[in-house]
Image (cartoon, rainbow, N blue to C red; front, top):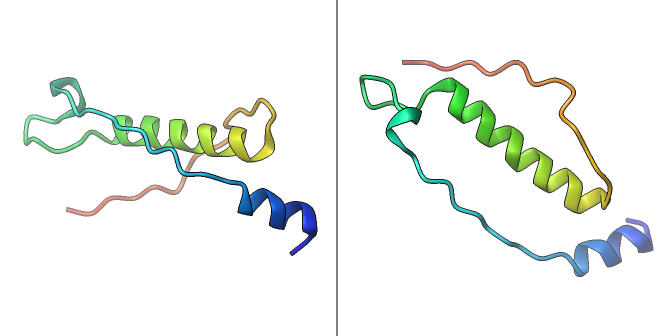
Length: 69
């Protein structure tokens, strides 16, 4: 690992955030809607990428999410 990346990892920190599940996030069967899950995954990816790169980021593509019953 390069010295820049090693220093970056050593100086990194964890800052958890909390999302609250509301009724609008649930199906009639009380399961999380796929749209809410994708939105939360997108937000977490944005925060992670922005903190790591210290630059503005956008999501280009998100696919390949499959659920099972």
